[in-house]
Structure formats: C-alpha cells, structure tokens
Amino acid sequence: MTFLRRNECKRHEAGHSGLKPFVCQLCRAPAARFARQDLLTRHARRAHAHDATAREQHEKRQRTPDMAARLGEQGPVMKRARMAALRP
Image (cartoon, rainbow, N blue to C red; front, side, top):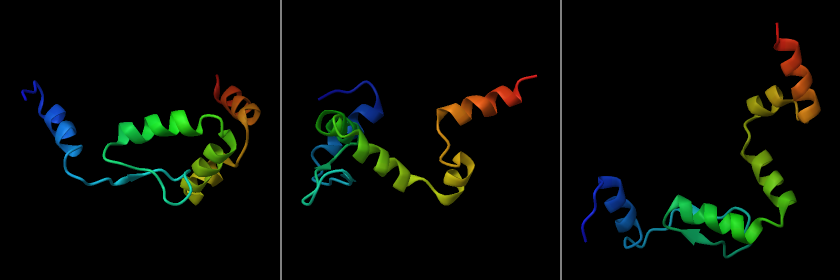
C-alpha cells in the first residue's frame, strides 16, 4: 500500500499492531478500547451523545485543581461578566 504522508502510514499500521491504548472512560467494564484516538472520539460521539451528564462528569474529573479554581465552576453568565470587565 502506498501513502503520500508518513503519518498516514503510521495511522494505518496502528490498526494492525494489536495495541489499543485509547480507553473509553464512559463505558462500564469491560470498557471499549481503540487503537486510534479518532476512533475513540467517534465512539464517544455515537455511544454517549445522549448521556450529557456522564460527559460533563468526565470533563470535571479531567480538570486539574488549578483549572477548577480558575474556572470557579462558574457558568457562562459569569464568564460573560468577566469578559465584559476586561473590555476597555
């Protein structure tokens, strides 16, 4: 098989390696595993699109304490107020 770009070849070979390092954090055990990040993203969009609560909880778990402190878990209204305060 011929590839125009090296990354295309690496992407193709990832499917044949047997390694599946990308694990869905939203699935129950046994969790779905994927060889490529884009396949995990597609799975999440298709399988978990209806489950917005689980997606929000996952994103909160991924935040560092520093990020949470900066965000202050303030919603979009607070963000708009902060942005308005920054305008000259």
